Length: 368
Image (tube, rainbow, N blue to C red; front, side, top):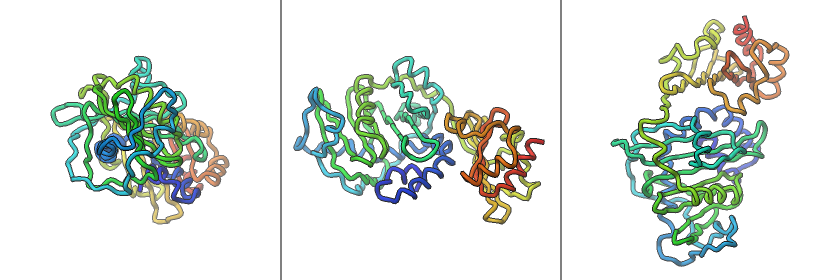
């Protein structure tokens, strides 16, 4: 189970395990966010289920009015959501993905997407079929805390020119709520979710098919506000041409030994072998690397990460520049956090380990 999936179900587990999951998620966030788009088509299964639910007659359909509050969309007056729903298997029609995450400011200024200053992390991907036709767009706004989960937020829009259908054999709904169906201006809005669970609102108009969702820590108001914005501002799908944006691909350090060569220590000379690695390429250029190192001693395991485009949280966690680190400061930081972050020639480097002496030897070699 990925960290995000675990966190979405936090109401079922002890908080200490959730906090540990978030620690793991922080280590992996760049990889998962950058690669969320690659799995976007597989994530559409649940979307198709919610779009299909609620169409079996008008029993329990609520009528919207101007006094409607955010929580009214989630009253649970519709059909019961099964814990698990089987759907016919189908191959995903998506053949490729392009990223438009670096166009956030431009799209905000043009009024294509809302401005969410409270969510500094942003991800936008567009998925296409074999003939280049746009299949779907996924936009995510994310907020985290440097420590703990108090400010955790995942707000996501999934939109498509045509209605999306299930593409997976089994969909695990796992929401302790009912589907609430609201009719507003002739449009059926289907909502599901309860407090401390993930929440979703799905609707279809002439402008397209839409679904907004929020994490377990997002309120009804958070999700409804995103719904209201796109209700009033349907997404302009022409903003995401098949030949636009950029492409993310993955490789390994063994396949791309040139990646970050100038900023990585000579691990082999210190007795470390790469047990695993991933290099993320942005239009063919390395932008992120994660290297798992081992010298045969489980206590000396090291996870070394390099990021060419650090986000605000990664920058905030940096102790300073490589040149300013001392053995004393590094040892104290690792003892407290089990990790250390610093800036090196414009890159953000994060090292996860409890072997402070081994990490210092590697860091000191970079200072020489």
